[in-house]
Image 1 (cartoon, rainbow, N blue to C red):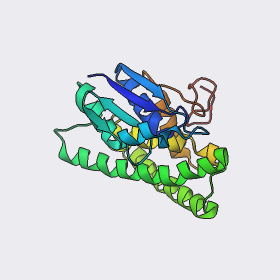
Image 2 (cartoon, rainbow, N blue to C red):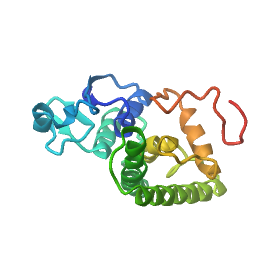
Image 3 (tube, rainbow, N blue to C red):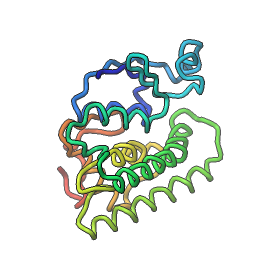
Length: 220
């Protein structure tokens, strides 16, 4: 089932949907929404679709989804024939994925918000957002380090899941918010692994794998 995505190209949350669609080769249409400076997401038309006035918005026939995590689950449910991205038959794995989907909201509300301050001069408590961003990255680093000791490179399973897609964008975009990855070797290895996936899609600030450093510090 195809869908239409109301999209802002610089949004990490919109990118999550485009990335998963690319990895699963899902046909879809995008409608550009002028988030800044046009504020089109607050227009009458967009508020009819999503009263919260946020992006992205996914529309498929009579279905309208306004929460990014729900969109990821919907796409995987309808288009992942392997049932690896959203393993519905494994209750423990899906529960852990839901936990990381919730964690991704912390990344959005910390790194994502700090990025808006850096790029669009959004008013906020910068110190609070910086502290929250660093705390989230340290938690992610610790988890990925533990997973590597166990022989895994992904957040939940021995293969990538929706957890990795949900957490990838704002982690990868943290340099836009002034937080580099130098102190997070496990995160760097994980970012490299995501970029290595077949069908990987870029966005401004997140580039192709070639010319970038992999987890060992060598050029790819």
